[in-house]
Structures are given as structure tokens and as C-alpha cells.
Image 1 (cartoon, rainbow, N blue to C red):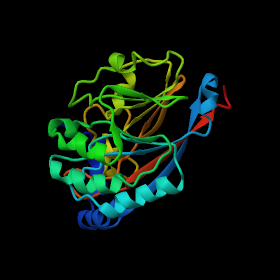
Image 2: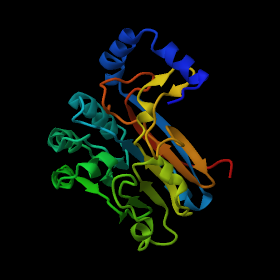
Image 3: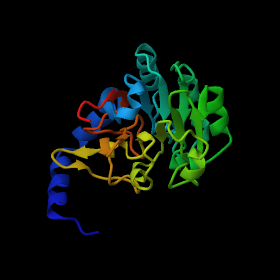
Image 4: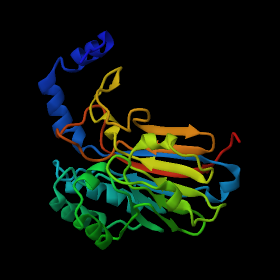
Length: 274
């Protein structure tokens, strides 16, 4: 693999003190829950959603050094906020389905007004077992695999993983009111470019972990397929927004660097520039 000079310098700068960096990222930052608050602008026709709060969590990878206390802290913040709906953007596990039980025990304490909704991640699909949907349902999570739920003033649509499943967006939204705004959950963020529906005011995604390990002045050192264009944060295309969360867990290595675990609280707001 050919490495550019810029890439090489960034890696040298980052790995100059690997033991200290790994220790900090594993023992400190990996357990530091960051609460991110972001306003999502609304098209004027959907101003009735002004103030609606959505909590986004995902990429738990609970069998890879998952922390019950970290999930419990996120649940506590959600319930104290309070939020209107929670969307879980997938990758509950890496490959061990047995980790679903303790994770779902913590998620069962969520109490949003409209409910908790979940989509599947690529790892969930690759290692699928009926325990995944069954335990989520028992915990009060409505799993949306190419399915939409009408919440009255808006709908929540969930797509199957693009990388690991069989998403069908036309089927998912075909029965929804053509005037009803849609909040969409889709694990892989680059899917934001794969469709155009003026009803979609917000897509929430995960998958990238924000890079999980980021080099100073450079950014994420490694991003997964279908998560390279939109690695983290808020993006906008006309009247639709995408928010990509850094997620809560870790994959492969129990470390985060310049990229702490995240609970995202998104508030829908009237677009004052429109």
C-alpha cells in the first residue's frame, strides 16, 4: 500500500508515544461519555416539529469490551432530558450474540415519549440470530428493518444495513402520507447520497465511530466502506440533514483517541435563514 507523505507524517506524529496514547485512549477516553447537542434546521413546511428532540446512540459493539456503566450513563441523560424519541443506529454486537442480553437490560430503562427505535448494523446482519430482534423487542425497542412507524406529526423509518442486509427504501416509505416528514435511521452514512425524498428531514447514522482513533491535525486514520464521505457530524443537502454519531463502543481495539464515545441529542429547529 502506498502511503502519502502527509499520511506518513501524521502517523509518525501520532505514534510517537504509542504506549502513552494507547493507555490514555483505553483507560480514560474510552470511558468518557460526550453529550453532543446539535440543532437540525427544518424546512418551513415542517415548522410544527420545532423543539422535537431525538437521541441517537449506536455502534455499541458490546462484546468488544462493552461497558454497562457507560450505557447506563447515556440512558440516564436521555431520561432526564427528556427526549421525544431514541434511535439506535445499529451494530449492537461485533460477532457474539450473547452480549445482547446485558446491553438490552440497560436499554430497557429508556423512557422517551414516542418510543425507542432501532435499525440493524452490518455486524448485526453478518452475525444475525433471532436473539437480536427478540431481546430488543423485550427491551422495548422497535426494530425497523425496511419498516416505518407513524408517530402522528412525523414518521420514523428504518432501513436494513446497506453493507450487511437488504435495504429497500421505496418499500419502507410507500404507505406513508406524502406530506408527512420522515426521520430516517440507516446504519451506513454514505447512503445519504443514494436517495432523494423531500419528506426526509433527517437521516441518522453511525458505522464510522468517527474514526475511533484520530490523529491531531489530520483526522480519522481509518474509515469503513460506506462511511468515508460522511465520517462524523452534521451535514446538509437542501432541506435534508444527516447526522453521523461517533457511537459508544469500540471495535477490534479497546481504545478511542480524540474521539470519545457519544450520546447525540438532536433538536429540530425552525430554519431562521429560510
